[in-house]
Image (cartoon, rainbow, N blue to C red; front, top):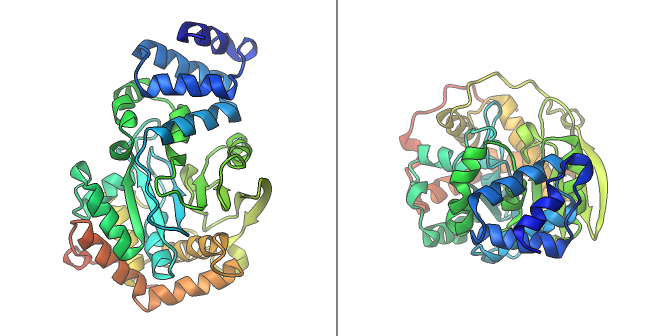
Length: 358
């Protein structure tokens, strides 16, 4: 079936269109990633899929196609993949960043990945945040990233460097300006082939669909988190809905910060890249605002539990608290910044947030 026929099948509107079978969707995905179809056909397909909503087989096919075109390593045998929104953050703390170094200090390797800002949010992404730390993500060397990962247990992957078709499709995606199937697929490339995953979603309808999708992959355990701004970060001021996916089964759970005496309103801030870095470093340094410290503790404790490193979220929280208070997490972060070619954190301004009393 050629692309014109595919477009007729998926482009008949919400009622008239049909879902593609896995083999059909994989063939289309490969053509798009290899740029074997015109930009107009690619745009028409992405828009049609958006209107009818992608089914699980179509999502799976696009994930596999992206994996086929990506460089994937296996540095960490027992690591956690943190799949946050590639369109960034505009109004919430990127807790996953400092949390990664707490987890690494606990002996759990972490893979972070992302790109330059994308639509629809055009928010602060990990790539933009890292440049504020003096790490040149425009010219990031894969060997430096790999070396830093081996030394510290934290790996950052620039997705468009490690999966070239995503870089080639960026101008089209920017021009379209809306979320497409690629926004999901790129987050599931699993660059380090990690057995554990936390994956952020925004909408209720997507929570169930992504959980079903993950039953088709070989994760030992995966969690779909309806987190802040569609991220993998648990809320600190209210319960967060999560789907646990394990051995082909899925179950809905609630993670309530009040159950661990961590619930507290976070101050309203203007979340620039500089502010994200300042707040994250303050938490790691030990003088962070209590709300952001608590959010790192909750997310860290949950992720240690999700990966089987502790027997309960509460045990994970106390483990993370000890690693923050001892300075172990901050030392890992300092080593990582230097290994990535960035600046020593202490050379930047110290946060003015009051120290945590916890």
